[in-house]
Length: 76
Image 1: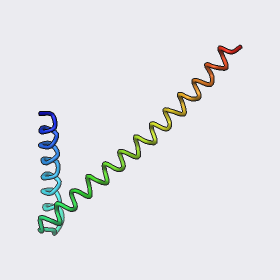
Image 2: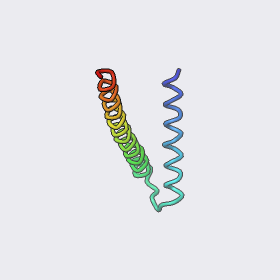
Image 3: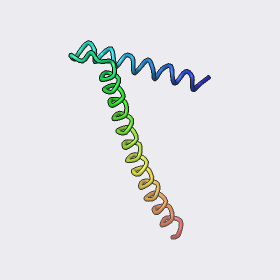
Image 4: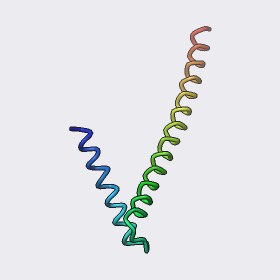
């Protein structure tokens, strides 16, 4: 049931993006519009994935620094 809802929402996002491209660009071919929409969402997904990776790395570094400080503090 959850997956079905996600698929419905994804389809709506894609359809909305296609309508936006139809209104703003001189592209009428449905396949071209679909390709543009898919490219948009694939690019967005990759950007979000990269951001999460960078944030995870930053958090891991901060945890490591905190661990090092605590180890120093408690070893005195």
